[in-house]
Image (tube, rainbow, N blue to C red; front, top):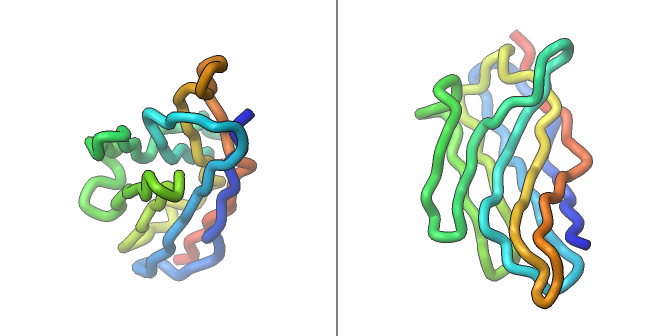
Length: 120
């Protein structure tokens, strides 16, 4: 099993910034993609940003130019730097990691979610 623990959410004014982090732990594993998703009340969960183990990134159009995803492979940690936050960024943000446990199965793990609230 691979567990993900998120931190860094909170309340911020519009135009402000937050940094989310997510650390993976558990069995000996190899992580391929790490990503951040978000889910606002009454809406479906959506991909915010993704980063491969080679550092290739992909962003939702709504966050391009404002959010930056990065990862520290040595620490199995992914970060989301969120700048110029808008009220519409308010959501629960979830970390996701996909990979394979060494001598074991593939995994697709989720964090518990962290609330981000942007006030106008």
